[in-house]
Length: 397
Image (cartoon, rainbow, N blue to C red; front, side, top):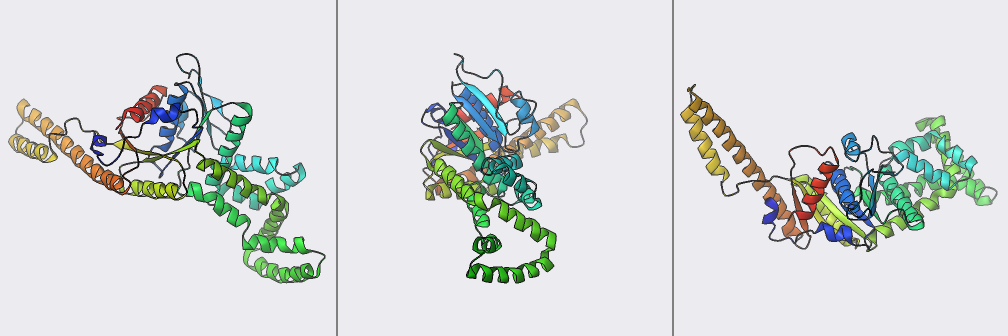
């Protein structure tokens, strides 16, 4: 397997992390489409079958993954996966899927009185913000993680939370989104819109209100009166909750830096995915966040690495030439053998490309532990499939 060639990288040992009672949060992160969700679910299942009480927070998983956990669907409420426990009966597995808008609604409902909350929830500007504002999904993933952690501490429901981060354009979005949303909520436009109301009744307030009137007349022409009215109503209603957004984001960010958290960076042996993984490793190091290591997913496994691509290619060409224009059984067998040799040559070439990219990563980050997991022949569609992935994660070099 290609993982055995990582001479510059220590091995990532998953089981000691899963069994460590001081580890309460595992964050699986990386570029989109590299198998983060499957990795998170597999780690959660393996930990539960080791006796831990686990909640897996997934972000937009494929329907087949919910079915793999024995659930008809996943939603914003943790639901227990039936039949999952350790041999002695200890341990449990819960799973949930982040509902971005519902989580945002819950934040508003829990930090505003009913009348003000209703004003916010029905406001068109809020509805757009909570559904499509850049970074909202990443922020709400952090918000939900904070909620789950508080619940686990207060109720003792889970002792391990496994987080699958959103399929963002960049893996760094997960850490940067709270600051971006906080900057928007604390930004110049918001301060301008709220300044007249805050200063009303004072000389400067009246002056600000006069200036604001001119400003809004301009915006009315550009944006339309209704859009500006919705924005103003939203700002007036949510103004008292701004501090809460930033405070909770800061608290969750501090939680991610705690030694009870462990980051697992997931990547495929592809240039863009490993570039994202490299950025994230550097960011974690800069922010002093606890990195467990890199899972290199979907690695090409070669059964006979001693039989080179060049040898296989030359043999395939020779057999094809021998079988040319022939119609005998021997010729058909030669063509079939040539096709198999060509497939082996292609796999060897792919493995060599992956090894080259992986070696570049390990050379740049020689101290980062690595686990290389071979590509499977088919998608994961049941708990046995997740167990297989979990076993490969634990045993891979």
